[in-house]
Figure (tube, rainbow, N blue to C red):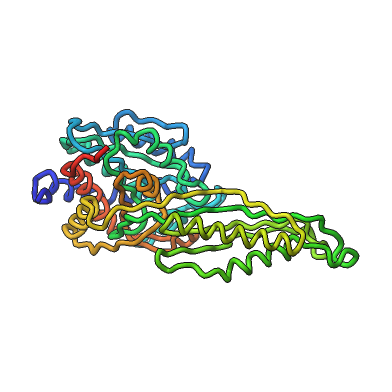
Length: 384
């Protein structure tokens, strides 16, 4: 097995030695604010670091992604290794990292600062070791993975490089995890409007808020399949003018998800029917604006890329946990390009101000990435 070869052994040893520098990289990245749609500062830092660690052809594309290459001999599969830059936190959020022993605490420290830092140090070790690769490794720090970013960064990269890419590994989530099934989603802004009026003098006139509430209540009563798992959520609501005004406008943001594209479309149609019915009953007007559309996709559990992940995890003493999720991997999976998403460390409270990670598992997380890069070199080329 290639794990026993000198190059692989050297990579694993190098990952352990790199841990102090890797931790400092995580801190540096985390302390650069990077809300979705505002990743410029963090992208500039990562571009500079890609050059410093020895990657070639470092560039920024129109979507804001940072891309660098490690050229191979050209005879083997090309790997896209990606980690998203953006976080869910507003730019004014205090992202100062607090060091508490082997714990780092800060918003976005795990999702996804640790992954970006690990990707950079994987590139550094591969360059310093002068590893002979069969195919290219394309390193990408992507924009727009979170929230309403709609995976636009990964979409741009895969559209541009789809004829070159054989495999994709996205870095996100927790160490030991493997995502091979993409959760698709459709996200909408629902806007309800009417004439409004005074709460006393115009009592009985249609209220946008009351009608929106009726729509939300009916959505909450929908029965959806457990297999394939399908879900809905109303995550944001707003509207109205004052306590004594019949609301002329109200809106909500809906999140519809499923592992199956057909089920997702059926759920959307059911929501549409609820909206039309409430329009008829109350006399309001309602519109749906599509805010995000994340595709579905999957590779089989026995796919060579999945088998490689499990083999690397076994070698490093990790138990593989396979689960579906919505990640940058959605895009290549939807286009028939084999992809998995793996994490690089352990922690908790993701998407919360008290997010944290443990630093010691980062060494195994980095070793995992390095072994995966080496292992992909021995996989067959993707059928075009």
